[in-house]
Amino acid sequence: MNVFLTMDYEVFFGEKSGSVDKCMIEPTDQLLKIAKANNFHFTFFWDIGHLLALEAKVSAFPELSKDIEAIIAQVKEMIAYGHAVDLHIHPHWEKAEYTNTGWQMNLDQHYKLSDFPQEERLAIFAKYKNRLEEITGIQTQVFRAGGWCIQPFADFKALFEEFEMKIDSSVMPGVMWVSPQYNIDFLSVKTSEPYTFSHDVCKLEESGEYTEYPIACRKYSPLFFWKLYVLGRLFPEQHKMWGDGNFIAQPGGKKEMLTKGKIHHVSTDGYFASELQSSYSAYAKNGGENMVVIGHPKSLTKFSLKEIDRFTARNKENIRFMTLKDCL
Image (cartoon, rainbow, N blue to C red; front, side, top):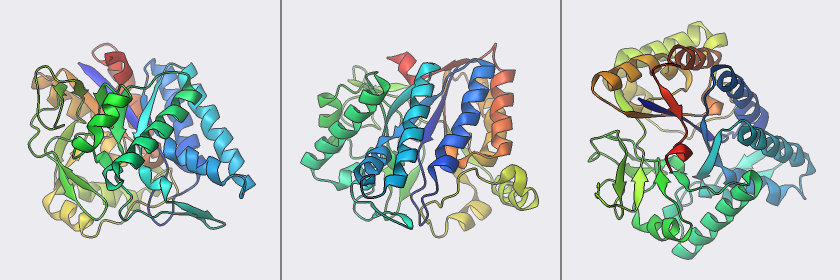
């Protein structure tokens, strides 16, 4: 089986964005050590808009220069070690403001790329992709939409054509999520295997122009979420997130998970990493050939890092750990 360990490289977007050191640099350093020890590579989806926002504000806030330098140095280290660094666009950075107290996010009507007019979408995509390639020195043809918001694909098709994008990895089969920020409906997608498409990211087309590598998803029971919350309180040293920011508030989400469970992506984040081996085993048993795993350095814990290390070390012989760039 091919397993793709992907990481969205970013800060938080809630009331507190968190620091670059805690959300990005420190946890990613730990990931790079594990990857080197176990001889595999990650796909890092870089929220490059964050860097561009830092660069736009650095003249007024010179202290931001150390964050810029640290991020660029780490990205170049990723490239030097053979990891893939690809495009992840959170366009709300176009409207974010920075003050002495930190970032003020303006998410309403600016969270999704589809919230912007077509001319602005084109300009944002061009600016973000060009800056990423300028730093990495490598063309990117692999994309993950911010917040997985790749719909309607009609808003993205001209961008994919213009900038020669080939692979997307935004779809989460069986997931629907509508909120003031999110608007995704992947209920009709029944496979976690790659498929080609042209006009609708949820509809397979045999000779499609683009390839979707869906993020693996599964149903997690209420008991799983109870364990997640209880262990976090009993053993905070092991289960506290590395990042020091806040997620976007989602009222009612916790109650739903604790009472009904939830379809959620297979993930390296926090306690979800405890299910990496069982998710892989279930996929393999059902004849699966590919499994895309998602994670975020900001959401890692000491526990999850141990689980990533254990999973990749244990399966060196029976899993091909690949980057999405390997599939171009």
